Image 1 (cartoon, rainbow, N blue to C red):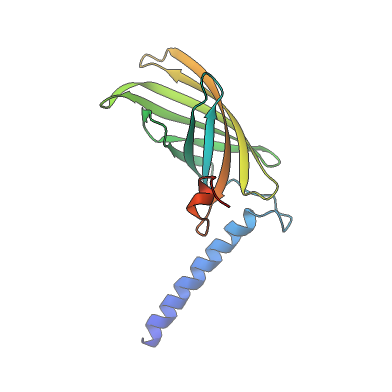
Image 2 (cartoon, rainbow, N blue to C red):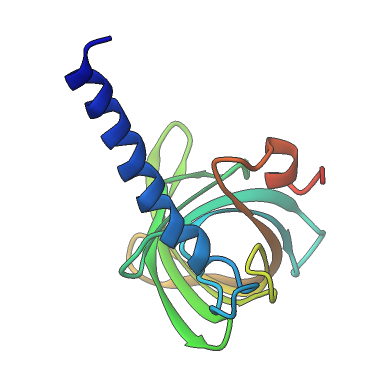
Length: 168
């Protein structure tokens, strides 16, 4: 391999490593830095109304306060999009909106979800309670509900069973 190409590859590797170090440090409280919610999380969500329904939810909390969320519930819906804000020590509120559809993909309304999140001391798991409101196509409130969730941080080195909450 020629010298220029080797130096280029080494530079890219160094830049990647330097970019990852602050993110890891911000997510770890072992060094006295309060953990951040930024990153990707998989939560096991359980409804608190009616018969218990459990599903997985994957959310990415982006720098600057944006989020995107998807889940494996049987509902036909869009990705959820919204914002997060820090409200206290290890405490956050996430607000997100999504479109609801009937089969095959007929728009039937929107849902607003507000999650109240508390990170554990290590910053690698969180508990949350959520309130949601479902609206029809005319903006009329159709129903409300509540759910709870336990989520785990999923990094480049996390195993899939760990992310899903079924492994160490």
